[in-house]
Length: 107
Length: 116
Image (tube, rainbow over all chains, first blue to last red; front, side, top):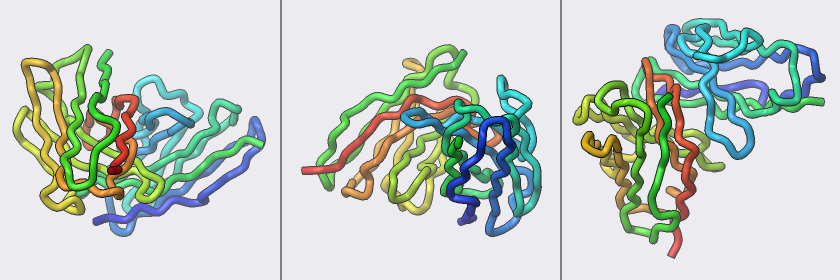
């Protein structure tokens, strides 16, 4: 099973600033990497798939990059509505696996 | 717009079988991959398995052979059965649609507690 490790566990950022979240895979997953946003009390929401392709309706403030074992999600112009936990997920190998999440706090 | 809704008992006794159904509206269940996932403080987000084309399935080996996923195309629903449950199976259970392995549509989730 591929282990996905996310960092930092918690990130506190001021409104208007940019947040950078990292995700590392225990072995190469190619570009088969997705990012999700989960707000309190809600189901996860797909932001990015294919490591860098935004899902339908996702604003350009969310951008993904990386390949193989190292991936990054950048969230620009942070607003209070971006407060959430962000997860990465690989779909290169079965079973599909998720990272432990990065909690984004807005100062 | 495709929408998913989980339904089933919120309380299951230890050693019994957890049964949940996901109703799909706004689209046909005959295409795409349809998955079950769960989320708990202990294990985080965990993919349980999927069904595709009404019969092709793939399950998470960590659950051994406890997971069964089936589909009822006449009702546009798919179902999860998890046998021999323990307290470790207490979680929020989600159904989701998958494209290329990424879950692009999720149900709201349903909380299942395993307790006597």
